[in-house]
Image (cartoon, rainbow, N blue to C red; front, side, top):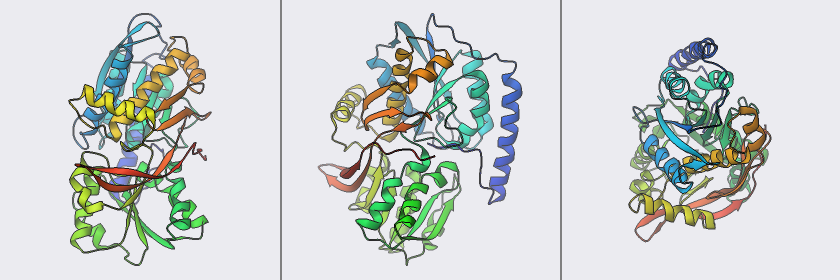
Length: 399
């Protein structure tokens, strides 16, 4: 999901974060010089690291990512190109990028990791960028990537460039829903800003107007002020928040009796979706992946995941980590078992996979190219699901 060097310093908290990141980058550059160049040993076990949030803020992401990665590795028999795989876990700190950098250094320097799954959040990706570049670590990161880090080969962004994620939505709102104006709501960090760019740009290009944009600091628990401050003259609210924050906002939104439609960028992930489903039935969204997608690869993934996880229905984090891991393994296979950074860079853009998202590949800027789907929240049996409405295949990344 989302890592740009330019954090918007609109609040004292954000100025402090920018300063902290500057220190983190300096530390990464100096420490990397003493840690070698990341030269690979293509014999013996292959160390794969997973660097997702397991503690602190958004710690539900970590176990979900781990479950997806474990399924992909189990399907591969814990081997790639004849080499045994060892999975090493590290905990991303969403609110303190310096801690994430320390974990990344531990995984690489002490554990011998050369392939990383994660980190997830943009501030974390920014924090480790200089270190990964110096040590030739290739990271497969979920939920997108930024144009500033595209092209290096250190970050393989699946499923897309973050600013291209919602591109099809803008035209759909203007042409199919006939909206003339929208308000937006998203977290005040890199991915939160970037994930709305595609939709807002294509909406305004189609003649629409963005009348209000609200940015919520990460860790905010009271979302009522943002619901109260909403410009109710807009035709719809276009929103992305991490799932538990989305649930809090919708509760506040409904308590105020607001009838405005909400368009959910990236839907709402399970299990939060199940708890809030009755409040958002008939709402629309745009997703890269959903349990409701009907392609054969997704049906197989859902069945295999349920079998491996006591009947659990997979969520967005499960799917993202699963595909990131499949991409990593396919890249190593394409490189003939080598984990040389230069060989992996050549190999990754040659990989084509039939994924739960749909057919996909990595472009010349190391960004995923796959489908995006407009979905509708419906009650189906005992569950709420995102029912596909319209699919856009091979959505390009526009740098």
